[in-house]
Image 1 (cartoon, one colour):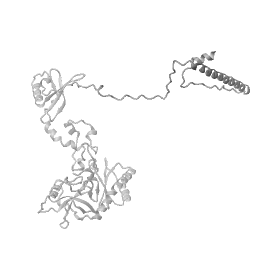
Image 2 (cartoon, rainbow, N blue to C red):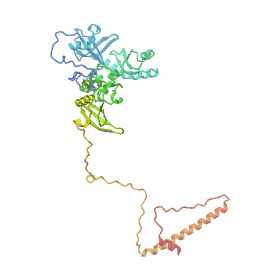
Image 3 (cartoon, helix red, strand yellow):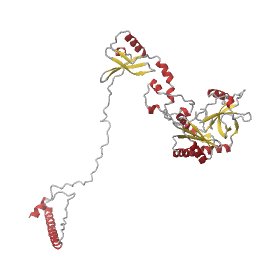
Image 4 (cartoon, helix red, strand yellow):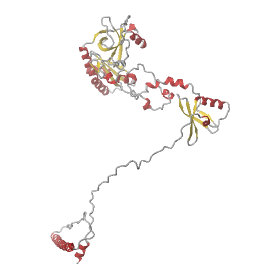
Length: 447
C-alpha cells in the first residue's frame, strides 16, 4: 500500500514523492494495489499464464487482459490495451500464477476475457494519457453545473477519460432512478466524446475519491477493501459502543466498515456470559447490571434507589453464574459486595500544594486616566510675596469691573435699537483644572 501522495499525484505514469517508479517494497503506489511477490523473486515460470491484471487511473478500476507471446509485458509496465470503443492505457499490476488466484477470487472465467494487450506504451501515449487526466477535473465541474441547471437529483462524483480521449465515463450517486437522456445530449454536445453514465453507491464514491479516516490512516475502501458488507447498529451494541451517528459514520456518511472487523471476536467472548443476568434480587434490594467488560470478564452491578444510584459492585462471570443459580434455587443473598473480588476505588482526596508564595505574578499595570491631577498648593507661603499678590489681585478685579460695565452698556444699546428679542451673550467662565480661589484675593476685593 502506497502513501496518499503517491496514489494521487502521477506524472508521466510514474508516482511523485518516493520516486520508486511504482515498484516500492510496500507493494506499489496504486490505491487498490496487490503485491506481486512472485515477480520480485528470481524464479522462472515453467508454465506461464497468458492473462494479466491491468489497473487504470491509479487502481480505481481493474481488468483482465490477454498477454500474447510476442508482447511479454511484466508487472509494472505501462501497456496499451484494446477496448470496445478504441484503446486505453494502464499499468500491469499482476502477472503469472497470482492472476489465476485473483480471477478465482473475483469469480471471473478465463474464457470470458476477450480483449488483450496491443503493445507497450510509448512517450506519445503517455502524453495523451496525461492530457486526458488533466481534463477530467474541468469536465467534472462543468458536468455538475449542467446537471444542476436541468434540475436532476444526482451528484457527479468522478469522471474518467479513456486513454485515447474518445470516451468519458461519468460516475454519479443518486437516491433513486434518474432520467438522464437529456443530460447525455448536453454532455455529448459540450465535451464532444462518447458518454457513459454509471451509477455507484456512497461507499464506491468514497473509495474512488479517497481520504483519511478517524484512525489517521487512508480509507480501507480506497486501499485494500474490495467488497462492501452490510453494517448495522447491532455491531456497535455488541461492542458496547455509544450509538452516536457522527462517530460511527465514515467519510461516505454510512456506518464504518471497521465495525465488522472485531465483531466475531466480541460474539465469541459474549458466549461465556450468562443469559438474563440484568437483575439480581438481594435482601438489600434489586441490583441492576449497568456495564459489562467483555474481554476482562467483569460485570458491574449497582442498587437502584428512588433518587440516586448506589455503590457499584464488580463481579466476575463465574460469580454471577453462581449467584443466579442460588437465587433460582430459592436461596437468599444478603449483599453483593460480600462476593466482590475486585474492589472499586473510592473517591480519594487529592493532595495539593500551595504555590501562592512560590510563584510571583507581575503586578497589574493600572490604567492611566486622562484627567489631569490637581497640583497641591503649599501651605506655608513667604510673607514677602503677599503684597505682590494683593496688587495683582486688585488690578485683575479692576479690569473685570470695566469689562462688565462695557458689556452691560452694549447690551442696553442693542435692546433699544432692535425691536426683536435678543438673548444676552453671557460668557461662561469654567474653571477647568484649577484649584479653589485664594482667600487673600477675596479679602482684598472686599476691602
